[in-house]
Length: 122
Image 1 (cartoon, one colour):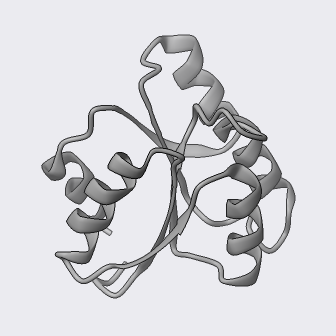
Image 2 (tube, helix red, strand yellow; image 1 turned 135 degrees about the horizontal axis):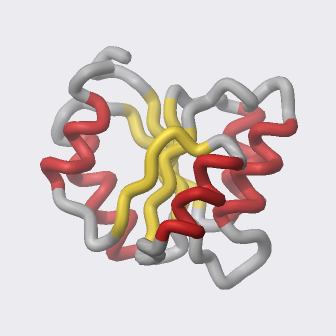
């Protein structure tokens, strides 16, 4: 992945969005934002990103696990890597994320270095 890669951030918390947007744009990534699972599904279908950073716990509509399941069920979005972002840090939640197609699982609060390290080897 190049530095001009497009990343879709899906989170309902403005403060989390601000931190992620600031961190990624500082390293020349193109950032798209969705504040719900439904909005993420629509955006990813119309403008497929290179990676999706997806919060698990969203109070409105569908949660991150269901959003990922639906993304992986659609041919147009099936191959987009999904990285879960969440405060849930127990093993069953992590396993569920991997079982439905997530490629990584980061717990909040996120560290700038941790987010950037995801994209360094790609």
